[in-house]
Length: 556
Ligand code: ATP
Ligand code: MG
Image 1 (cartoon, rainbow, N blue to C red):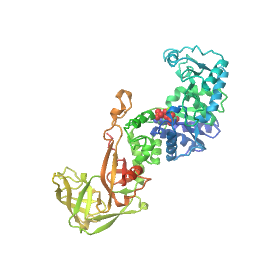
Image 2 (cartoon, protein in one colour):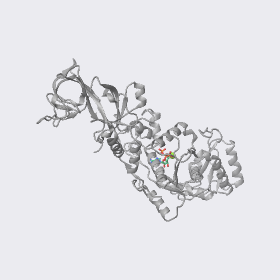
Image 3 (cartoon, rainbow, N blue to C red):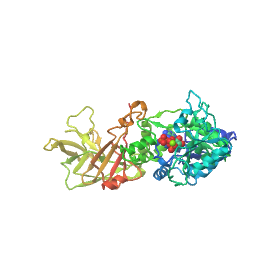
Image 4 (cartoon, rainbow, N blue to C red):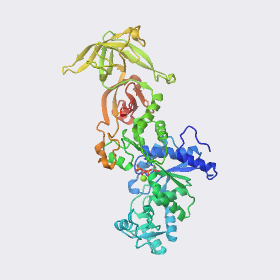
């Protein structure tokens, strides 16, 4: 059992290593990733996935995928399928079959009866309001329920009647009998089971009572032989209950719960409930909208699994909560794509350029590298002819200081091609510039003649050999650093109105007529762009999503 050296150590890894070294931990390490199938996974879940599967990998152990499915009304098969796909896409393989907490409903039910028989649980008929009132507060101890001392026989009968459908939603609950005066509110006789007449996506209508998370989770862990149950910090206060449940039943084993800090990212939200609201209220185009911090959204935007895993490594695992800068996630994808993404030229807002001294019937095929630092990626053919397009934003008539692009009577190199000089600006009736008439210098293909220096390098495509495409320029979904902090009003008020700009009529070089679907391109001088397969099929021409710009434009 040796730790993988290239990955950063985290405190959980050190703690397990320590136990292994001292001989305190001798079994195989078994972890689990336990999502509730009530939404799509987000970048916070990616951290938990990398941690759980990473620990299993490090110690040659196993990691289970378990759906924590005890709230049938909020869950669905759609979410289960999406979650499985996301975990696989991140590059992880769960041990054996997918598991469900609902696989253990029979066992959970028996353990509940065991607690009742031992006098450790009772059926309570207090209304929800009364129960809250009896529970006390952080400052005041609670009071015992009047049903707390009913006999085990009576509770057992009532519990069976609950199961058999003899009571309505909310009429009765099963509660643990722990301590109504405990300073830890979670130990004030927490609910273990409640009545819910709801069809379950796995068990259909078999059950009308469903176990609570705090009862289900430790038992599911124990049933699967989980050795380390890693969860986020908000469960720290639940740990005594986790242990209480396992201490008071004939548990198959005693997993250890260890908490770590949630991942929070600025300029976005990491809560399935709030993300669902954006989807339900059509503020985004579905769970996989490329602006969403969901794994499916990041995938559609062009994030690679490697970049998401690198990001999770960079973030690390610790006990201290905090917020990570979105710039770090963007850095991770930029670094990954810089070394791997094929280069191409795409003109976003085409402006026609006619090379007046170039023959109308001639075409030259220029050969450019697919990647400037990686010859193994090969070469691409980029035809040059009389009519070309450059970006509207690469031309001005009034030249600002340090202008490194085209202007009247200024010379600029077209990337990989010739140097051209603008001789004439053509306008339409409304005064808008519709064409530039330029001259090229035949001696400048790939070289600058002695004493000659063009004013910069810009990208271009030729009219006859480029392909029309649409571009989705995505930016951050929110323009506020912490859009869901309650003090700052409603998160909808912080949606960035410029999070999507659609450019119709862009033109991309011919080699991208059928774009790669597994990796984004670097469009020179513009950023990284990933072909959206769904939108491409619908549009009948390539549609590219901007993954990330070349530089961080948000950094202050
Ligand atoms: P949400 O509030 O988004 O629904 P959750 O914690 O309720 O999150 P679960 O489906 O229960 O979602 O989470 C599955 C696992 O992922 C849990 O172990 C949980 O602790 C972990 N997890 C969820 N959100 C984060 C996060 N932001 N950072 C790290 N781990 C997370
Ligand atoms: Mg949850």
